[in-house]
Image (cartoon, rainbow, N blue to C red):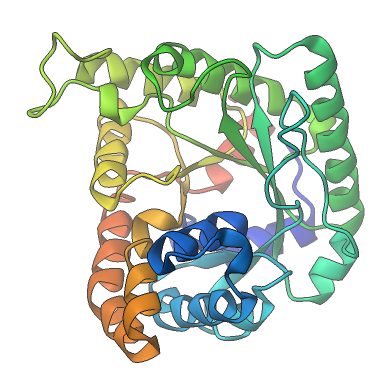
Length: 337
């Protein structure tokens, strides 16, 4: 598998010295606004944009010395990008936040007024788009999504910049936090990975959720009688999803707690998953939102220097078993992938 010089430079800017991506995600827009609304007692629509910008700036300045890259949005995140550590790479999101809930399918759309070329000019080392995807969706839904990803892939090829595809697993008729979806999540993740590793999409790296819902894995607090999977069964699902990937992939935290995400990385390591890092957001900085809302910027800085750094270091500790991003490309080039 050939990787162009521009795409290779992008990967090198985003990874650490081992070739592992230890990235911080704070490209949230509507989700961040919702957190601010909850902390302040306001409606989301009434939350002003300036505190969101400031929060991202503080997170970027204090936490990026502990990250190989940061994912931000170009709408309200560019000032935070400017405050990142000089050795930290930059991913920029290209999709609009959210989706039209009145239309079945959770269709994605690109940001107005931006292009891959413009995001590169803004300093992006790589481009990321988020796609809600389920192999169980109707054909017309997925055909439209496939074409959308293909268009972004072509644009990233033309711009010679790495294309990160974030796959968010869901089902059109299920609550993705519930037990019914947890039963099919391993298939959703694995089949989605298989789909978007196909060359027609020109994806360079996948950002995926772990293939099980950790809240349903047997543990000291969840007996086997109430669990959907044992820890050993969870490992099987991790291995299966990993083996389905011919491209490098990294895990996203899916909004879970720092403790749960750390456990997910531990299971991935035990399973021998060939993941190449993480793009972790709320599991690191989530609890800083109410601190900022209630007590201000100085209190937020104190929290970030304490709990925030502790959280990101805990995630980084889970990357000991991660594989270099270039390993999959080398395997594909040699015919072993």
